[in-house]
Image 1 (cartoon, rainbow over the protein chains, first blue to last red):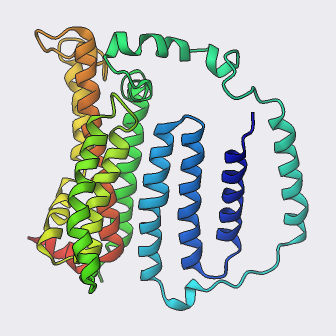
Image 2: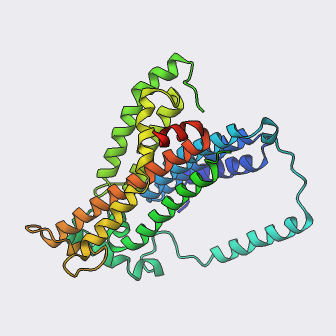
Image 3: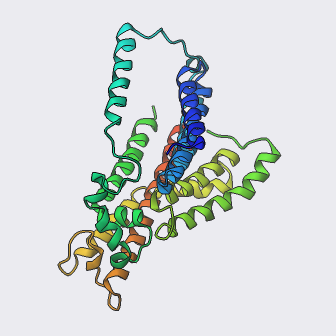
Length: 175
Length: 150
Protein backbone atom coordinates (compact mmCIF):
# COMPACT_ATOMS: atom_id res chain seq x y z
CA UNK A 1 0.00 0.00 0.00
CA UNK A 2 2.74 2.44 0.91
CA UNK A 3 5.47 2.78 -1.68
CA UNK A 4 8.96 4.15 -1.34
CA UNK A 5 8.09 7.17 -3.53
CA UNK A 6 5.41 8.16 -1.06
CA UNK A 7 7.74 7.86 1.91
CA UNK A 8 10.33 10.00 0.13
CA UNK A 9 7.73 12.65 -0.78
CA UNK A 10 6.25 12.70 2.72
CA UNK A 11 9.74 13.05 4.21
CA UNK A 12 10.41 16.00 1.89
CA UNK A 13 7.07 17.51 2.95
CA UNK A 14 7.99 17.17 6.63
CA UNK A 15 11.45 18.64 6.08
CA UNK A 16 10.24 21.64 4.08
CA UNK A 17 7.33 22.33 6.46
CA UNK A 18 9.58 22.14 9.51
CA UNK A 19 12.14 24.30 7.73
CA UNK A 20 9.54 26.96 6.87
CA UNK A 21 8.56 27.12 10.54
CA UNK A 22 12.02 26.95 12.07
CA UNK A 23 14.14 29.05 9.72
CA UNK A 24 15.28 32.44 11.04
CA UNK A 25 14.88 34.47 7.84
CA UNK A 26 11.41 35.25 6.45
CA UNK A 27 12.65 35.20 2.84
CA UNK A 28 13.93 31.63 3.24
CA UNK A 29 10.68 30.69 4.96
CA UNK A 30 8.67 31.93 1.95
CA UNK A 31 10.81 29.99 -0.51
CA UNK A 32 10.61 26.86 1.65
CA UNK A 33 6.83 27.25 1.75
CA UNK A 34 6.81 27.41 -2.06
CA UNK A 35 8.79 24.19 -2.30
CA UNK A 36 6.46 22.63 0.28
CA UNK A 37 3.51 23.44 -2.00
CA UNK A 38 5.35 21.93 -4.92
CA UNK A 39 6.01 18.65 -3.10
CA UNK A 40 2.41 18.65 -1.87
CA UNK A 41 1.20 18.99 -5.47
CA UNK A 42 3.36 15.97 -6.36
CA UNK A 43 1.61 14.03 -3.58
CA UNK A 44 -1.82 15.05 -4.91
CA UNK A 45 -0.85 13.99 -8.42
CA UNK A 46 0.48 10.71 -7.04
CA UNK A 47 -2.87 10.08 -5.34
CA UNK A 48 -4.72 10.77 -8.60
CA UNK A 49 -6.18 14.19 -7.77
CA UNK A 50 -4.67 15.92 -10.78
CA UNK A 51 -6.92 19.00 -10.63
CA UNK A 52 -6.01 19.62 -7.00
CA UNK A 53 -2.34 19.12 -7.83
CA UNK A 54 -2.64 21.70 -10.60
CA UNK A 55 -4.17 24.28 -8.29
CA UNK A 56 -1.63 23.56 -5.55
CA UNK A 57 1.31 23.95 -7.94
CA UNK A 58 0.03 27.12 -9.60
CA UNK A 59 -1.40 28.92 -6.56
CA UNK A 60 0.75 27.61 -3.71
CA UNK A 61 4.12 27.42 -5.41
CA UNK A 62 3.59 30.23 -7.93
CA UNK A 63 1.19 32.99 -7.06
CA UNK A 64 1.38 32.66 -3.27
CA UNK A 65 5.17 32.87 -3.29
CA UNK A 66 5.07 35.98 -5.48
CA UNK A 67 2.53 37.68 -3.21
CA UNK A 68 4.55 36.80 -0.09
CA UNK A 69 7.75 38.13 -1.68
CA UNK A 70 6.10 41.39 -2.78
CA UNK A 71 4.78 41.84 0.76
CA UNK A 72 8.28 41.26 2.16
CA UNK A 73 9.76 43.83 -0.22
CA UNK A 74 7.35 46.44 1.11
CA UNK A 75 8.32 45.81 4.74
CA UNK A 76 11.42 47.18 6.44
CA UNK A 77 14.49 44.89 6.36
CA UNK A 78 14.58 44.61 10.15
CA UNK A 79 11.16 42.97 10.13
CA UNK A 80 12.29 40.03 8.03
CA UNK A 81 14.60 38.61 10.73
CA UNK A 82 12.80 36.51 13.26
CA UNK A 83 13.55 36.02 16.93
CA UNK A 84 11.18 33.43 18.31
CA UNK A 85 10.59 32.92 22.00
CA UNK A 86 10.77 29.26 23.07
CA UNK A 87 7.37 27.50 22.96
CA UNK A 88 5.28 27.74 26.12
CA UNK A 89 4.49 24.79 28.36
CA UNK A 90 0.85 24.70 27.18
CA UNK A 91 1.99 24.38 23.56
CA UNK A 92 4.35 21.56 24.43
CA UNK A 93 1.56 19.64 26.18
CA UNK A 94 -1.47 20.37 24.01
CA UNK A 95 -0.06 19.93 20.53
CA UNK A 96 1.41 16.43 20.99
CA UNK A 97 -1.92 15.44 22.54
CA UNK A 98 -3.77 16.87 19.54
CA UNK A 99 -1.42 15.01 17.19
CA UNK A 100 -1.99 11.75 19.04
CA UNK A 101 -5.75 12.31 18.93
CA UNK A 102 -5.64 12.93 15.16
CA UNK A 103 -3.52 9.82 14.60
CA UNK A 104 -5.95 7.79 16.72
CA UNK A 105 -8.91 9.14 14.70
CA UNK A 106 -7.11 8.51 11.41
CA UNK A 107 -7.06 4.77 12.10
CA UNK A 108 -10.83 4.75 11.53
CA UNK A 109 -10.65 6.38 8.11
CA UNK A 110 -11.67 4.19 5.15
CA UNK A 111 -8.85 2.82 3.06
CA UNK A 112 -7.58 4.68 0.01
CA UNK A 113 -9.83 3.92 -2.98
CA UNK A 114 -12.26 1.88 -0.90
CA UNK A 115 -15.44 1.53 -3.04
CA UNK A 116 -17.61 1.10 0.09
CA UNK A 117 -16.44 4.22 1.90
CA UNK A 118 -19.24 6.72 2.66
CA UNK A 119 -17.84 9.26 0.20
CA UNK A 120 -18.02 6.75 -2.66
CA UNK A 121 -21.55 5.49 -2.15
CA UNK A 122 -23.55 8.65 -1.50
CA UNK A 123 -23.77 10.82 -4.61
CA UNK A 124 -20.44 10.33 -6.39
CA UNK A 125 -21.70 7.37 -8.48
CA UNK A 126 -24.51 9.56 -9.86
CA UNK A 127 -22.04 12.22 -10.95
CA UNK A 128 -19.65 9.68 -12.43
CA UNK A 129 -22.39 7.94 -14.41
CA UNK A 130 -24.23 11.03 -15.65
CA UNK A 131 -21.40 13.50 -16.27
CA UNK A 132 -20.83 12.75 -19.94
CA UNK A 133 -24.39 11.83 -20.75
CA UNK A 134 -25.90 15.03 -19.30
CA UNK A 135 -23.21 17.65 -19.84
CA UNK A 136 -20.86 16.32 -22.58
CA UNK A 137 -17.97 16.89 -20.19
CA UNK A 138 -15.57 13.97 -19.69
CA UNK A 139 -13.76 15.66 -16.77
CA UNK A 140 -16.10 14.92 -13.88
CA UNK A 141 -14.37 17.42 -11.58
CA UNK A 142 -15.19 20.25 -13.99
CA UNK A 143 -18.77 19.15 -14.52
CA UNK A 144 -19.39 18.87 -10.76
CA UNK A 145 -17.78 22.22 -10.03
CA UNK A 146 -19.31 24.14 -12.89
CA UNK A 147 -22.65 22.47 -13.49
CA UNK A 148 -23.96 20.27 -10.69
CA UNK A 149 -22.56 22.55 -8.00
CA UNK A 150 -22.34 25.79 -9.91
CA UNK A 151 -24.01 27.93 -7.26
CA UNK A 152 -21.20 27.00 -4.81
CA UNK A 153 -18.62 27.92 -7.41
CA UNK A 154 -20.34 31.24 -8.03
CA UNK A 155 -20.11 32.14 -4.37
CA UNK A 156 -16.44 31.08 -4.37
CA UNK A 157 -15.91 33.47 -7.26
CA UNK A 158 -17.60 36.18 -5.21
CA UNK A 159 -15.14 35.43 -2.39
CA UNK A 160 -12.16 35.86 -4.74
CA UNK A 161 -13.66 39.07 -6.12
CA UNK A 162 -14.26 40.37 -2.60
CA UNK A 163 -10.68 39.56 -1.59
CA UNK A 164 -9.38 41.57 -4.55
CA UNK A 165 -11.61 44.50 -3.63
CA UNK A 166 -10.53 44.28 0.02
CA UNK A 167 -6.84 44.32 -0.94
CA UNK A 168 -7.40 47.32 -3.18
CA UNK A 169 -9.29 49.21 -0.48
CA UNK A 170 -6.77 48.44 2.26
CA UNK A 171 -3.52 48.86 0.35
CA UNK A 172 -4.20 51.64 -2.16
CA UNK A 173 -4.49 54.42 0.36
CA UNK A 174 -3.34 57.91 -0.47
CA UNK A 175 -2.62 60.57 2.05
CA UNK B 1 6.97 50.68 -8.01
CA UNK B 2 8.85 47.94 -9.82
CA UNK B 3 11.67 48.93 -12.13
CA UNK B 4 12.72 46.82 -15.15
CA UNK B 5 15.15 44.04 -14.34
CA UNK B 6 18.75 44.76 -15.35
CA UNK B 7 19.84 41.31 -16.47
CA UNK B 8 19.70 40.63 -20.21
CA UNK B 9 19.18 36.92 -19.47
CA UNK B 10 16.04 37.60 -17.47
CA UNK B 11 14.71 40.01 -20.10
CA UNK B 12 15.30 37.63 -23.01
CA UNK B 13 13.89 34.66 -21.17
CA UNK B 14 10.87 36.75 -20.19
CA UNK B 15 10.16 37.69 -23.80
CA UNK B 16 10.34 34.01 -24.65
CA UNK B 17 8.40 32.56 -21.69
CA UNK B 18 5.53 35.01 -21.18
CA UNK B 19 3.69 34.19 -24.46
CA UNK B 20 4.08 30.48 -23.74
CA UNK B 21 2.64 30.94 -20.25
CA UNK B 22 -0.32 32.86 -21.65
CA UNK B 23 -1.05 30.29 -24.35
CA UNK B 24 -0.74 27.49 -21.79
CA UNK B 25 -3.20 29.36 -19.58
CA UNK B 26 -5.72 29.56 -22.43
CA UNK B 27 -5.15 25.86 -23.16
CA UNK B 28 -5.78 24.92 -19.51
CA UNK B 29 -8.87 27.12 -19.44
CA UNK B 30 -10.52 25.69 -22.54
CA UNK B 31 -9.26 22.13 -22.09
CA UNK B 32 -10.66 21.99 -18.56
CA UNK B 33 -13.68 20.01 -19.74
CA UNK B 34 -11.52 17.22 -21.17
CA UNK B 35 -8.52 17.09 -18.90
CA UNK B 36 -7.17 18.52 -15.67
CA UNK B 37 -7.59 22.24 -15.38
CA UNK B 38 -10.46 24.65 -15.63
CA UNK B 39 -11.43 28.21 -15.00
CA UNK B 40 -9.64 28.75 -11.70
CA UNK B 41 -6.24 27.35 -12.72
CA UNK B 42 -6.44 28.86 -16.19
CA UNK B 43 -7.21 32.26 -14.69
CA UNK B 44 -4.33 32.04 -12.24
CA UNK B 45 -1.91 31.07 -15.04
CA UNK B 46 -3.13 33.96 -17.23
CA UNK B 47 -2.77 36.36 -14.32
CA UNK B 48 0.68 34.97 -13.47
CA UNK B 49 1.82 35.65 -17.03
CA UNK B 50 0.82 39.29 -16.70
CA UNK B 51 2.44 39.50 -13.23
CA UNK B 52 5.64 38.06 -14.74
CA UNK B 53 5.74 40.80 -17.35
CA UNK B 54 5.26 43.42 -14.64
CA UNK B 55 8.03 41.88 -12.52
CA UNK B 56 10.50 41.63 -15.42
CA UNK B 57 9.80 44.73 -17.50
CA UNK B 58 8.55 47.05 -14.75
CA UNK B 59 5.35 48.97 -14.40
CA UNK B 60 6.08 51.50 -17.11
CA UNK B 61 6.97 49.18 -19.98
CA UNK B 62 4.60 48.91 -22.90
CA UNK B 63 4.39 45.17 -22.22
CA UNK B 64 2.88 45.89 -18.81
CA UNK B 65 0.29 48.20 -20.34
CA UNK B 66 -1.95 45.22 -20.86
CA UNK B 67 -1.83 44.22 -17.19
CA UNK B 68 -2.58 47.81 -16.24
CA UNK B 69 -5.61 47.99 -18.52
CA UNK B 70 -6.87 44.69 -17.16
CA UNK B 71 -7.39 46.36 -13.77
CA UNK B 72 -10.40 48.18 -15.19
CA UNK B 73 -12.06 44.79 -15.71
CA UNK B 74 -12.52 44.08 -12.02
CA UNK B 75 -15.92 42.48 -11.68
CA UNK B 76 -16.41 41.56 -15.34
CA UNK B 77 -15.83 37.88 -14.57
CA UNK B 78 -18.40 37.98 -11.80
CA UNK B 79 -20.80 39.68 -14.21
CA UNK B 80 -20.30 36.95 -16.81
CA UNK B 81 -20.88 34.17 -14.27
CA UNK B 82 -23.99 35.69 -12.70
CA UNK B 83 -25.13 36.87 -16.15
CA UNK B 84 -25.14 33.31 -17.48
CA UNK B 85 -27.17 32.36 -14.44
CA UNK B 86 -29.58 35.18 -15.20
CA UNK B 87 -29.83 34.19 -18.87
CA UNK B 88 -30.98 30.76 -17.72
CA UNK B 89 -33.91 32.40 -15.98
CA UNK B 90 -35.24 33.93 -19.20
CA UNK B 91 -38.24 31.86 -20.16
CA UNK B 92 -38.91 30.56 -16.68
CA UNK B 93 -35.81 28.45 -16.05
CA UNK B 94 -33.82 28.04 -12.86
CA UNK B 95 -30.84 30.18 -11.90
CA UNK B 96 -27.60 28.60 -13.22
CA UNK B 97 -29.40 25.59 -14.66
CA UNK B 98 -27.75 25.71 -18.09
CA UNK B 99 -30.27 23.30 -19.55
CA UNK B 100 -32.72 26.23 -19.53
CA UNK B 101 -30.56 28.42 -21.78
CA UNK B 102 -32.82 29.52 -24.64
CA UNK B 103 -30.65 28.55 -27.58
CA UNK B 104 -32.51 26.96 -30.49
CA UNK B 105 -30.95 23.99 -32.21
CA UNK B 106 -28.91 22.75 -29.25
CA UNK B 107 -29.72 19.65 -27.29
CA UNK B 108 -29.75 19.79 -23.49
CA UNK B 109 -26.32 18.28 -22.91
CA UNK B 110 -24.70 20.68 -25.38
CA UNK B 111 -26.38 23.61 -23.67
CA UNK B 112 -24.98 22.53 -20.34
CA UNK B 113 -21.56 22.11 -21.94
CA UNK B 114 -21.81 25.66 -23.34
CA UNK B 115 -22.85 26.97 -19.95
CA UNK B 116 -19.82 25.30 -18.36
CA UNK B 117 -17.49 26.97 -20.88
CA UNK B 118 -19.05 30.40 -20.35
CA UNK B 119 -18.92 30.24 -16.57
CA UNK B 120 -15.34 28.98 -16.72
CA UNK B 121 -14.40 32.04 -18.76
CA UNK B 122 -16.09 34.15 -16.07
CA UNK B 123 -14.15 32.46 -13.26
CA UNK B 124 -10.87 32.77 -15.18
CA UNK B 125 -11.38 36.50 -15.83
CA UNK B 126 -12.29 37.10 -12.21
CA UNK B 127 -9.27 35.20 -10.85
CA UNK B 128 -6.78 36.69 -13.32
CA UNK B 129 -7.91 40.26 -12.69
CA UNK B 130 -7.88 39.72 -8.93
CA UNK B 131 -4.34 38.28 -9.01
CA UNK B 132 -3.02 41.21 -11.08
CA UNK B 133 -4.96 43.67 -8.94
CA UNK B 134 -3.47 42.35 -5.68
CA UNK B 135 0.05 42.51 -7.13
CA UNK B 136 -0.52 46.10 -8.24
CA UNK B 137 -1.95 46.95 -4.82
CA UNK B 138 1.15 45.55 -3.16
CA UNK B 139 3.71 47.12 -5.42
CA UNK B 140 2.65 50.43 -6.93
CA UNK B 141 0.52 53.21 -5.61
CA UNK B 142 1.25 56.08 -7.97
CA UNK B 143 0.79 53.87 -11.03
CA UNK B 144 -2.67 52.89 -9.87
CA UNK B 145 -3.66 56.49 -9.41
CA UNK B 146 -2.39 57.43 -12.89
CA UNK B 147 -4.19 54.48 -14.38
CA UNK B 148 -7.51 55.27 -12.74
CA UNK B 149 -7.36 59.00 -13.34
CA UNK B 150 -6.67 58.42 -17.02
